[in-house]
Image (cartoon, rainbow, N blue to C red; front, top):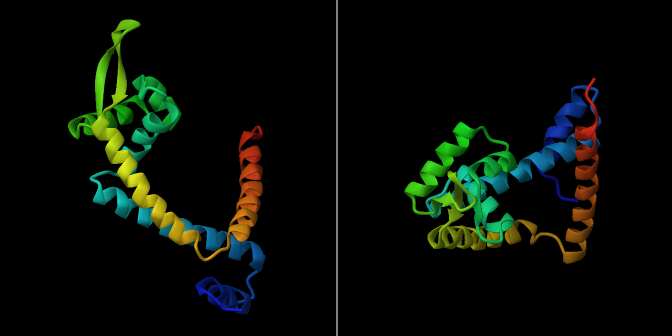
Length: 170
């Protein structure tokens, strides 16, 4: 069996007599390391398309969750768990790039809606295509059956974490 840098770290932990479950530590360290590499690749992809991860989250919310690419700034802020000030800042930047536009809300003249522009859709689609190829490279070390198995195991972990997050504190 080949050994990775996490195995070498776990050897050090084990040799130091530290009381840790090495299997759990291996899982957490590997998931963290893979996540860092994926985030770095995404930041690189987004930078190549003139976007930031913050831009990406707003464009994704408009591109994927809204059939017409429109919603209110308040709904976006709630969906992305942002303050209204942070949302305004992100929208200002995306509007200056031509990726979104603010329009009067047809149902309330005092309000505005945010709309994804064709330029914004094209930027999101182009970055998503490149990032999708990079993510396929990350998973290419596994067969399709292994990918399905890993997805099932990670889903099980995620569901347990989500359930724990919903439990009352205290």
